[in-house]
Image (tube, rainbow, N blue to C red):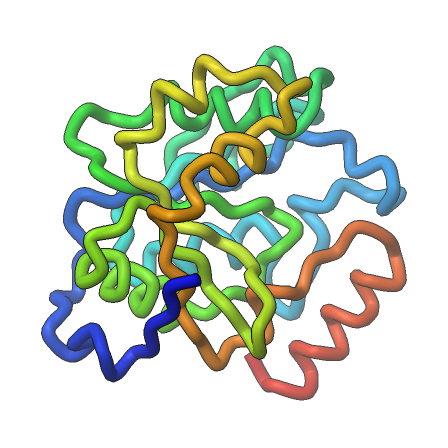
Length: 219
């Protein structure tokens, strides 16, 4: 397993903008286990989708797309106000991988690599996104995973050289995870000091824990 830290990749040399990158935020699901619509749940002064989008914009990723499906009408104004793009996944009932494919299909031809973030992981730090980019650029690998205390989290940064394989794969073949597993030798693990890469909110207790995390950290 390849692993690098921030001091090994010249983080201070990275410009404010992260050229050639895009971010795909997955926000199309039913949120059935939560019992409330996760993208619009309040987290401090923002919603989950607002935090997710602004995290990328603040990091210098100017091309951010939110994939929506369930209750997409409620998302239109929010996404437009944030300055992000929106893709409606009409197949969202088929599961998250259909949203991954919808997002990848929407990528512009000048995108060389994309971050992929479920909307229920909304507290990743912008500095982590920049660190991933720097490590990816310096590694020559196709995938960069953030790692906190030995655990991989979100969002991976994935080369668009894998786009065709992602689009041709089936959810029954373990979806994106199955594709990425085939390219483990082309992956680099990036050690970060950001517990937020591991924090998601699937059920109400997760949501309460996330709110407590924000209160502790003052984010």
